[in-house]
Length: 332
View 1: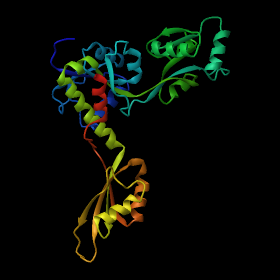
View 2: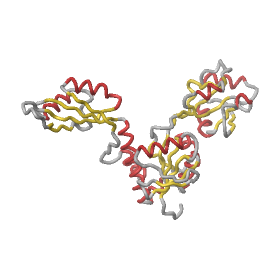
View 3: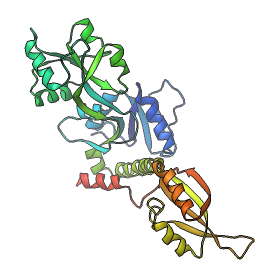
View 4: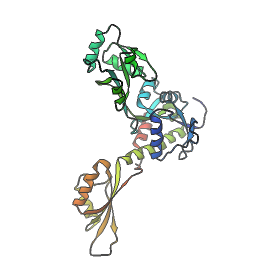
């Protein structure tokens, strides 16, 4: 470990994760300030004690493992390939909601008889040479093939893998797949049961630094606080409705008979000041899941709701982030 005082967060310097990570942090209220796009350093004004550096996805994992960087955002695929055996890389959040892909085995379309791992195993016995698999993930791929008893030899490759079977230096590939269009364009086909790892963007940290440096532990809490509150808010909407009723309790009891309009702990109900004092109106505020909005509107209407307003939610903060509790527990 070194004696630096600045806390560091590493972000991807290239590839599809780079703009997605910057957009994600901005939406979470942690925009990155990078005055010169050519620089490999930046800041997050909302967290002045945190400096940002940009590295390749795999290098982020190595830097966090070695302790030269405290936190990193990179793909789970890179984490599992590069984290090593010393337990220094601690996963704080493995579902940041972007960069989804899967590491898969893909064979040439001409191998029509190879549809799964069983038929691939049989194909390997028919070749005049060991089954050659080109990949940027030799550790994960090798473990997967060994686990399924498929004889092979790994070919470590950089750059574009999809051309390897056509050129002839590999028989198949193990590569990251998102839409699958690139495989199709190169006449490759993923095996139905050949998924090695499902991946998305992940927040990682150095275990020893978290344990030994209270400032880094506090920074981890702040990062998880913003990230969890943002991710929770993305899944929900704020719904406000006017409702006629005898009392807040009577309205609440009617709402509790429904499935999705009960709110997080319960509805917030406040009186509406109306000109016609013969009628009692109340404003009802609840948080509902985004995918349940249509049902929520129907349920509110069924018990007299009207004038319904729906608005996005920026954050939903809990008393303490669950993943912060998990982080502290993992350090014990």
